Image (cartoon, rainbow, N blue to C red):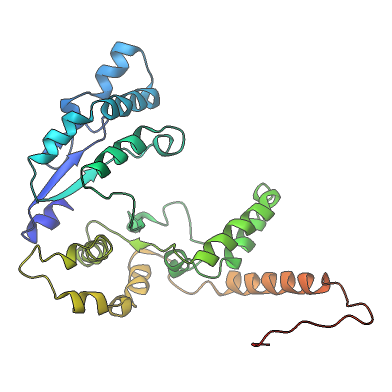
Length: 280
């Protein structure tokens, strides 16, 4: 990504916030290793890898003046933050939250908007064939297919009601979608960068001579990329044909559920009036 952005003549600064990244394939302008390293922390405090990373991030959160000073030297350059991937830092610890809150106070906006990316898409079938076609995962539509697939696993079947509630929540809001990324594929990287530029407002800022007008950028839709997911599936998935059997079974599963719900509706008692709405 660093090479790609600089190839676009976009002045890019890389900020490494992962204390475990001691050997990087790209140059960094700012690195947490200048402040604290995972190896030293584990050795001096007798901590394991996870405990060491949590300690390092808490140490950074307590010493944000160091990071603020470094960021001021970057000026108006395009900044990419490389953050640690341990999920515990985002679910069970507030260090990353404190770091983001501090950055927000000095003008950065790092939580919203966001772009979800399915990276390493070329390795997506390393553990077997996908139960659904790729566009099902990127568009996240009609999750009854997913409910059916989960219900076939004896262990996951006991969470059927929870899975249904989560699927309904996702479909009601309609805010979840994914871009695909193979870092070796120029077209794939271009698509992700353009999605990020639009979501973050970079294309509206006039920061590059080649930027489009605000009107053209705002009016652009995803239509020009409509066939990209299908192309990605054909390129990287060995079984690129439609998953007709599973999708047919999933439709039948959904119809059965709807019938069960219809049967459970109580009949009106004699004398009760049916309330109707304008669109009925």
